[in-house]
Image (tube, rainbow, N blue to C red):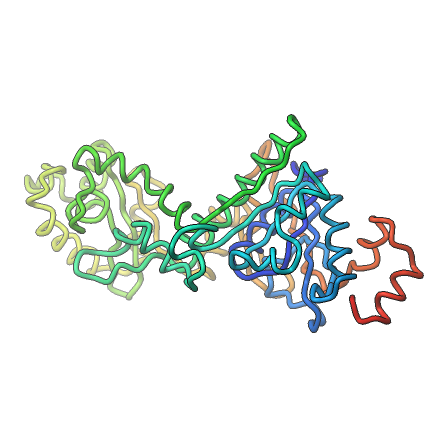
Length: 374
């Protein structure tokens, strides 16, 4: 029983961030019914974004199958779709028709560019949305190509998580007012919204438009350094007391150059000195020396290494399930370590159970199968 137990969601099959949103809600206990297209079979454990959901297959090109979809919509709190604007309307499953069946429905729509605007119908991917919103600008060192971490800033951070927040806010309002809503979650909007902390710094001169001149992308005390074995570490002691501990542990406490932490004119030269210093020893050496202190340090780990790190193991955050490494539900509630997430369903695995729940009996199910609608 998760914290979202009792919340019902219908998700129409899509790619990337919309299924991730459905997974997040399922991880937290929502009953997520995934409406999949015909022509699939089996279950692929690597499809982590399907875990914990129930699957039904419908041929939405057929009117009788669309009617079943509308019956599902009539019995749910929220809907998730991540198709191009207008596709659900052409299927006869757009918000106007859906709200005729269920006025309390929260209709969640996730796209890259949004439902409106000159780019609304354009193709795009994570890197494009994060680029246009400004969120990719500081992703990398000055002089290097700005490349944000794949999918995290756009698809997941700016898209899936904002859709989840929008759906949950809409469900709360619908339960009070009896009125549903349409959530227009655009990745370009969400990734722009995530920039507001940086915009706060920018407003006081802390994050200039020219890359490599701020504490977060130019200072010697905030960044990644390569070690002698090719491994990487990260440091980030922005606060003076943490910075002083770092330079003391590095044996630099008597070097006057390093005492002027915020003298930006010194940052390039000091960065080169730290680069040379960290390159003298392997990553494990620096980890043993700095990890577990207040110098704001962490080794930069591969996913496989992260799984075996003592902190991640203590929190049991990463697990291998059915041969697939994955992260368990987040956030946590009352300090309880989450159970293993639900399994990845086979395509159409729960079709009969789902149909029975909306009052469709065995005889009609048999007829629908014979007509090729399921």
